[in-house]
Figure 1 (cartoon, rainbow over the protein chains, first blue to last red):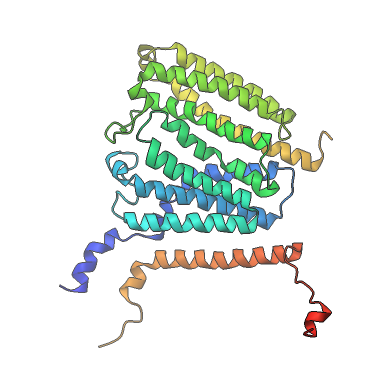
Figure 2 (cartoon, rainbow over the protein chains, first blue to last red):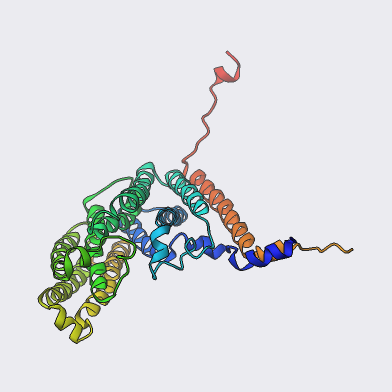
Length: 311
Length: 57
């Protein structure tokens, strides 16, 4: 056997840099970067721009590391679901051991470097986020409970709190409420999608609320979480990160979001199928704008404060 | 028999090698930048040696 015959097989399978990068779930990372950035800038302490840049980078790397560890552990279910079958491990481009090594290395790297660059509270929160996402969510609860979306959402909600802690070395009401904003937003956002997209979580034996408790219960859950979300979102407007711009955005968007959740709750499957889930799709699109606009408004308020407008 | 200047593995793994090289370069820049910022901010200060210590007393 020659080298050529061996290489002809490995040529198409060999992982490129992009395959390793894909382990870090870059799309999820964009949300992490944006919300951590807002948390960092909304904090009352100013951070040196380079330290701030590094803090966001290390938070993003920590988030990516937990994504790699998630892909390492979940490679069996990723392989049987259409949405995830092209991920680097089920596609045969990266081995599980490689994903584990990359995930562990980047976890340690991101936590240690965030601690050195900013403070150890921020580093501790990042370490807890990685632990929570990988051990509590991925390994333990994801395959046990249909509330898995709520638990996974908690892990994705930590970045603004970490950004805030990186700037202040502290946890405050405002940073906890920023956590609550993403935490309570995730379930209605995802369950609305689950209502109109046929997901193959069943094949992977991952419990989904739409399947375990039915679509009626899912509609009720969406409404309940949306009401809770509105309370916390408006409450955030009364903290130091709020202001007239944030409150205006929050009042309008929460009113629209509640209206959408109410409409989803009132309909039955026949009505949804008759108009091809128009209301559910509209609600899902609104949920994307909802989160972006809330954090965007916090960012704007921080800019307004620094520039002294309304002072 | 001529020697190829480039082994086929260099072509095959070009993207990977370039990526790793850029990441390592960025790591050096980040550590250097953080060091400069921290020294400028006064996070690290050399303790002045006392007279007694310098005299060995």
